[in-house]
Length: 459
Ligand code: ARG
Image 1 (cartoon, rainbow, N blue to C red):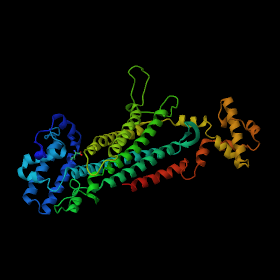
Image 2: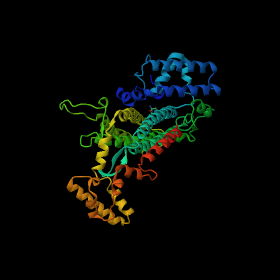
Image 3: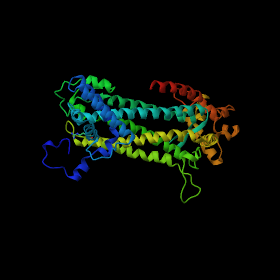
């Protein structure tokens, strides 16, 4: 018998029940649902709608159901329309008449919105925590490799020398922004809908502020129609999750390229790589590839919910039940990816000699040669041209700029002196890039120290 069957002449069709039911996926809201009901019941006692005795029975009954669901002695796979109906049915089965009074002054519309907000808040905390761990690992790596030279790229062509520590700090900046975005999503979720009823509030003298306090919510939803129809906070989380996945996919892409024999910049730990069923020599970066690949489904979940919400009439529509699976999937996917990327980074070997060698034979110091000439009074355009001609000369000789004898160099420009070799050394090149935000080892060390502070401020 359905809890709402009063006005119906016959049972719903089986395929309709099946189509309508959200229990298979909203069962994971059971903690939030029970927590919300406990706060609601306590408030009903406070304002005199329930007796103390009824309130106690409800609290004990809900406690029992919570424990049973947590331990698995109460199955979450039962015939019920959703988690709210299941909990209420079980409660009435256990405590009798008092159970039927729990839903006084409440609708599943404000109930589900509350459950989702509580769940999103928890998810934001879990995500921020995982991001914190990742940021800490990145800062540690940046400090460890602050002085190690590697080629920096534009257009995936070797461009100028940077430091490996600087490269780690890129990702730190991105994931730090992600923490802020996750915190914004939490703030958006931190608002209590209960009291909005189905759409138009309720005639009962509910104490919404009391429930707010019981549930530890920052704010109260201030319009009953908005309270039941708003899913912005889910989209806010998905937005944060999407940018984070995008950042992860870029990081993984670099790791994948860097681990090729052609680059040879890094060697992934065997524990984080996989083999081929056919080719015995293969060692594949599956973890990084999967993270890169899973970015697609998280994007999809965002677009799906955004589309569900598009042009939805006020207030609640069943379409909104579709907010859950995509959100849960995005949450699970992101948390899993974050739990893998951190150990993937910390167990990887960074091949420092290769990184340095590739910076040198890629002429990443060609700009520095031009800058050196500018220092000797040559206009930049001419200096650029001289440096370019020397690169062409080296390409023919298959050598680095630093290998060209001084007398040869001077044929390209008489302004070149013996001190050119110092200017061309990769360490000079990175040490000189000490403008704020630059890759100089001193900068990297300073930014890493500051990074720990910036991270702490986001706690
Ligand atoms: N399972 C529903 C959902 O997830 C709960 C709210 C149902 N409300 C209603 N009026 N049918 O959205």
